[in-house]
Amino acid sequence: MHEASIAHGILRGALAALPDGKKITRITIVAGAQVSVVLESLDLYFQELSRGSLAEGALLDLQQRAGKLVCKSCGQIHEHVRGTPVSMICKTCGGANRLDITNELFLESMEVEDLQDGGAK
Image (cartoon, rainbow, N blue to C red; front, top):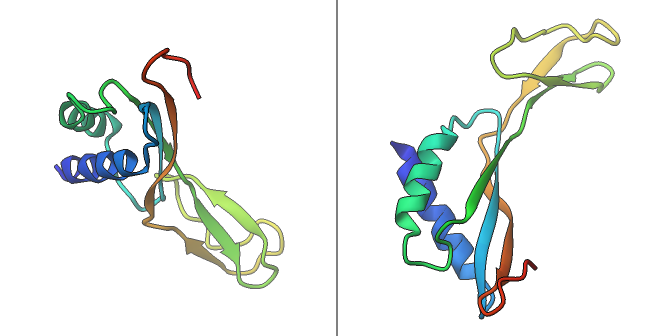
């Protein structure tokens, strides 16, 4: 259910950044590896909340960032895929890894078009 408040925040932020004479056609959101967001629910809430606004019908693009395994010895960084076992041993030198995951969630970019001619910008 937290998708409703996330959708509200995305809509509010996108509309606040929207230049005059434009409408939003696509919004890209980035979520850290520790953030659990169901895109279908987020999109459903966003579409309902944006009805009648300059973001109505905009597509949501959710980019999930992978966690990182960082070696404490050599500094080598390997991607950790969510849902897979965490390797605490560095593949490069055999040293100890630490898991670096984030809980960030932010609006990365948006595509807009002119209200008059419908041309993408």
